[in-house]
Amino acid sequence: MARLVLLFLFMVYILNADIYENNCLKCHNKLPVSIDKYFYRYLLKYSSEVNVKKAMVNYLNNPKKDTTIMPEAFIKRFGIKKKTKLNEKQLKKAISIYWEKYKIFGKLK
Image 1 (cartoon, rainbow, N blue to C red):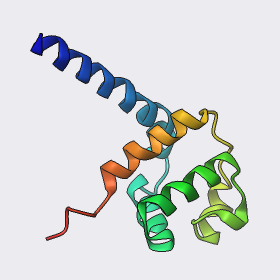
Image 2 (image 1 turned 60 degrees about the vertical axis):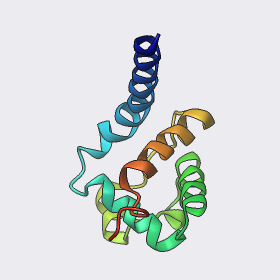
Image 3 (image 1 turned 45 degrees about the horizontal axis):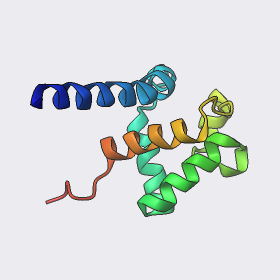
Image 4 (image 1 turned 30 degrees about the horizontal axis):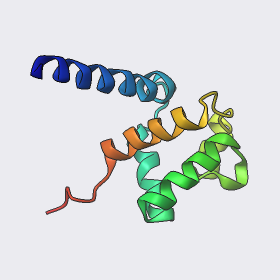
């Protein structure tokens, strides 16, 4: 029974990680700016987990030059990203995985 529970949890983890890896990292790994840098920019501007996640959802659903956190030089070179193809649930899950990966809260000593 314990093995089945572990297998189920592992499968849930793999499926959830795929949302982030296949829909975020796939493109971001091609850029010269590592994906953690976006996180820190969001954190500096929006401060809290709730505000960061809300801002990311809003931007990814409706990307605009005036709502991006990236500097002008970056936008001139790479442009504004296209609207996400993820549905709301998938997008929030991907952002939650991203948050857990790069959050600094509880990691500082």
